[in-house]
Image 1 (tube, rainbow, N blue to C red):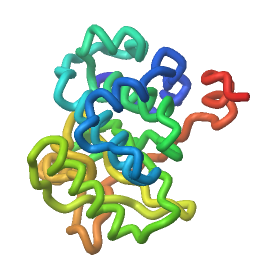
Image 2: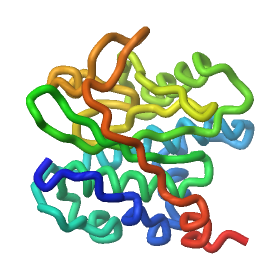
Image 3: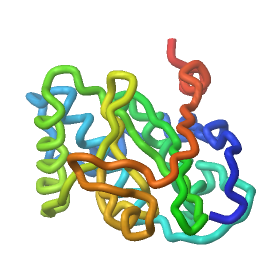
Image 4: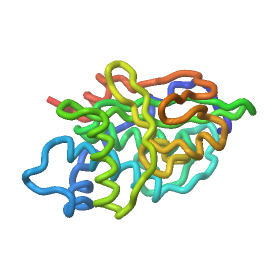
Length: 213
């Protein structure tokens, strides 16, 4: 990651341009949703659809220290790990079914640095294992696809799922991160090779950006 440092990139997470994102998700997932589904179905829908939107549509391109604004990323669809993580974080922040997002600053033993996103869903009425199975079900229903292990960190009473738009092939995937030396261990016991810090955008700033009453 060129120009990597511990600069607070959460200041660039901006959900305001995406306040209507729910319409996009309903249209994309109309075969998944019906009037009888509960909020956690919408949560799994939002987490999977928004991750796949960025992961599939964006291509990697080094952009240097300047962060591409999320609104521009929505049509440019090119950027480095910072640009894509900030863009995905902005989309998630605009989705009311997603609890929190945070940026994760990591490194490997070769001195490479990387920035990625984690997302904490609203999970209140089911166990974590049940929620993971719901995410798997969303992949099967939306993309006719089976996915592998889903990695997350448990912190502040929430599960934080790895959602790296550059290196993850699906929500919770760390295979490329492991091959690149950023992750050690397996699903039962894993850790970042070098963890610099986590940074979360201000709740108040996100709240104000969306003009919640």
